[in-house]
Image 1: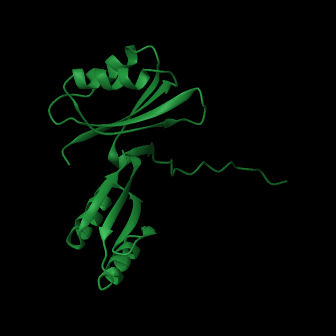
Image 2 (image 1 turned 180 degrees about the horizontal axis):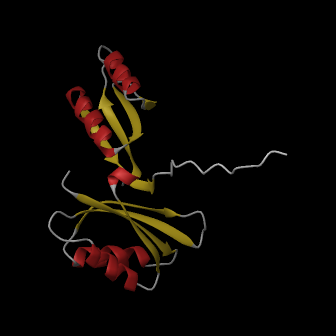
Length: 172
Protein backbone atom coordinates (compact mmCIF):
# COMPACT_ATOMS: atom_id res chain seq x y z
CA UNK A 1 0.00 0.00 0.00
CA UNK A 2 1.12 3.56 -0.63
CA UNK A 3 2.06 5.87 2.21
CA UNK A 4 -0.89 6.33 4.50
CA UNK A 5 -2.04 8.19 7.55
CA UNK A 6 -4.36 6.73 10.15
CA UNK A 7 -6.63 9.23 11.85
CA UNK A 8 -8.82 8.31 14.80
CA UNK A 9 -11.56 10.89 15.15
CA UNK A 10 -13.78 10.99 18.23
CA UNK A 11 -17.12 12.55 17.26
CA UNK A 12 -20.48 13.15 18.85
CA UNK A 13 -22.76 10.24 18.02
CA UNK A 14 -25.20 12.27 15.90
CA UNK A 15 -26.94 11.97 12.56
CA UNK A 16 -24.86 13.17 9.57
CA UNK A 17 -21.48 13.46 11.31
CA UNK A 18 -19.90 10.62 9.32
CA UNK A 19 -21.10 12.16 6.04
CA UNK A 20 -19.62 15.56 6.98
CA UNK A 21 -16.28 14.04 7.97
CA UNK A 22 -15.90 11.91 4.84
CA UNK A 23 -17.10 14.72 2.59
CA UNK A 24 -14.50 17.09 4.02
CA UNK A 25 -11.72 14.57 3.37
CA UNK A 26 -12.80 13.79 -0.19
CA UNK A 27 -13.19 17.52 -1.02
CA UNK A 28 -9.53 17.97 -0.05
CA UNK A 29 -8.54 15.40 -2.68
CA UNK A 30 -7.61 12.54 -0.36
CA UNK A 31 -8.57 8.98 -1.18
CA UNK A 32 -10.07 7.17 1.80
CA UNK A 33 -8.37 3.79 1.78
CA UNK A 34 -10.21 2.40 4.80
CA UNK A 35 -13.03 3.54 7.07
CA UNK A 36 -14.37 2.00 10.28
CA UNK A 37 -16.94 3.49 12.64
CA UNK A 38 -18.21 2.25 15.97
CA UNK A 39 -19.54 3.62 19.23
CA UNK A 40 -16.84 4.42 21.78
CA UNK A 41 -16.82 3.42 25.45
CA UNK A 42 -19.12 6.40 26.07
CA UNK A 43 -22.27 5.90 23.95
CA UNK A 44 -22.52 9.66 23.33
CA UNK A 45 -19.47 9.41 21.08
CA UNK A 46 -18.28 7.32 18.15
CA UNK A 47 -14.77 6.62 16.92
CA UNK A 48 -14.10 6.95 13.24
CA UNK A 49 -10.86 5.33 12.07
CA UNK A 50 -9.88 6.71 8.68
CA UNK A 51 -6.89 5.57 6.65
CA UNK A 52 -6.05 8.00 3.86
CA UNK A 53 -3.46 7.71 1.11
CA UNK A 54 -1.21 10.69 1.58
CA UNK A 55 2.03 10.52 -0.37
CA UNK A 56 2.20 14.08 -1.64
CA UNK A 57 -0.03 16.23 0.57
CA UNK A 58 0.50 16.96 4.26
CA UNK A 59 -2.21 15.67 6.58
CA UNK A 60 -2.16 18.79 8.77
CA UNK A 61 -4.67 20.58 6.51
CA UNK A 62 -7.25 17.81 6.97
CA UNK A 63 -6.72 17.83 10.74
CA UNK A 64 -7.22 21.63 10.89
CA UNK A 65 -10.40 21.38 8.83
CA UNK A 66 -11.74 18.46 10.89
CA UNK A 67 -11.21 20.45 14.09
CA UNK A 68 -13.57 23.09 12.66
CA UNK A 69 -16.46 20.62 12.43
CA UNK A 70 -18.73 21.21 15.39
CA UNK A 71 -19.28 17.51 16.25
CA UNK A 72 -15.57 16.59 16.25
CA UNK A 73 -14.29 16.19 19.81
CA UNK A 74 -10.76 14.87 19.33
CA UNK A 75 -8.40 13.82 16.55
CA UNK A 76 -5.35 11.58 16.84
CA UNK A 77 -2.96 10.59 14.08
CA UNK A 78 -1.48 7.16 14.68
CA UNK A 79 1.73 6.10 13.00
CA UNK A 80 2.01 2.38 12.20
CA UNK A 81 5.12 2.09 14.41
CA UNK A 82 3.34 3.58 17.44
CA UNK A 83 0.01 1.80 17.11
CA UNK A 84 -1.62 -1.59 16.87
CA UNK A 85 -3.65 -1.94 13.67
CA UNK A 86 -6.09 -4.71 12.83
CA UNK A 87 -8.44 -5.54 10.01
CA UNK A 88 -10.72 -8.54 9.50
CA UNK A 89 -11.03 -10.69 6.39
CA UNK A 90 -13.97 -12.98 5.68
CA UNK A 91 -13.61 -15.19 2.60
CA UNK A 92 -15.46 -18.01 0.90
CA UNK A 93 -13.01 -20.37 -0.77
CA UNK A 94 -13.65 -23.17 -3.24
CA UNK A 95 -12.88 -26.35 -1.31
CA UNK A 96 -13.44 -29.66 -3.06
CA UNK A 97 -12.84 -32.62 -0.74
CA UNK A 98 -9.36 -33.37 -2.13
CA UNK A 99 -8.11 -29.82 -1.30
CA UNK A 100 -9.84 -29.18 2.04
CA UNK A 101 -6.93 -30.39 4.17
CA UNK A 102 -4.60 -27.90 2.47
CA UNK A 103 -7.00 -25.03 3.12
CA UNK A 104 -7.52 -26.06 6.74
CA UNK A 105 -3.74 -26.25 7.22
CA UNK A 106 -3.27 -22.76 5.74
CA UNK A 107 -6.01 -21.35 7.98
CA UNK A 108 -4.35 -22.97 11.02
CA UNK A 109 -0.89 -21.63 10.10
CA UNK A 110 -2.31 -18.10 10.00
CA UNK A 111 -4.32 -18.74 13.20
CA UNK A 112 -7.56 -18.02 11.38
CA UNK A 113 -10.88 -19.77 11.85
CA UNK A 114 -13.24 -21.75 9.69
CA UNK A 115 -16.65 -20.21 10.32
CA UNK A 116 -18.87 -22.04 7.83
CA UNK A 117 -18.62 -25.19 5.73
CA UNK A 118 -20.56 -26.13 2.60
CA UNK A 119 -20.34 -29.08 0.23
CA UNK A 120 -17.76 -27.46 -2.06
CA UNK A 121 -16.79 -24.29 -0.19
CA UNK A 122 -15.34 -23.18 3.13
CA UNK A 123 -15.76 -19.76 4.75
CA UNK A 124 -12.74 -18.54 6.71
CA UNK A 125 -11.96 -15.50 8.83
CA UNK A 126 -8.77 -13.86 10.02
CA UNK A 127 -8.22 -10.68 12.06
CA UNK A 128 -4.66 -9.37 11.88
CA UNK A 129 -2.54 -6.48 10.63
CA UNK A 130 -3.38 -5.56 7.02
CA UNK A 131 -0.10 -6.88 5.57
CA UNK A 132 -0.71 -10.32 7.10
CA UNK A 133 -4.22 -10.34 5.60
CA UNK A 134 -2.69 -9.48 2.21
CA UNK A 135 -0.36 -12.50 2.52
CA UNK A 136 -3.20 -14.80 3.60
CA UNK A 137 -5.46 -13.65 0.77
CA UNK A 138 -2.66 -14.16 -1.76
CA UNK A 139 -2.12 -17.75 -0.53
CA UNK A 140 -5.87 -18.46 -0.71
CA UNK A 141 -6.11 -17.26 -4.32
CA UNK A 142 -4.88 -20.52 -5.97
CA UNK A 143 -7.71 -22.44 -4.25
CA UNK A 144 -10.28 -20.12 -5.82
CA UNK A 145 -11.69 -17.26 -3.79
CA UNK A 146 -15.44 -17.21 -4.42
CA UNK A 147 -16.06 -14.07 -2.37
CA UNK A 148 -14.04 -11.92 0.00
CA UNK A 149 -14.81 -8.99 2.26
CA UNK A 150 -12.44 -6.98 4.42
CA UNK A 151 -13.39 -4.56 7.13
CA UNK A 152 -11.91 -1.15 7.55
CA UNK A 153 -8.79 -0.87 9.64
CA UNK A 154 -9.03 -0.11 13.34
CA UNK A 155 -6.14 1.14 15.44
CA UNK A 156 -5.19 2.12 18.97
CA UNK A 157 -1.96 3.62 20.31
CA UNK A 158 0.54 1.10 21.65
CA UNK A 159 0.64 0.85 25.41
CA UNK A 160 3.50 2.38 27.33
CA UNK A 161 6.24 -0.02 28.31
CA UNK A 162 8.11 2.28 30.63
CA UNK A 163 8.47 1.09 34.18
CA UNK A 164 7.36 3.35 36.98
CA UNK A 165 10.31 4.47 39.10
CA UNK A 166 10.78 2.64 42.35
CA UNK A 167 10.08 4.60 45.48
CA UNK A 168 12.84 4.43 48.05
CA UNK A 169 11.57 3.44 51.46
CA UNK A 170 13.81 3.99 54.42
CA UNK A 171 14.22 1.07 56.75
CA UNK A 172 13.66 1.55 60.45
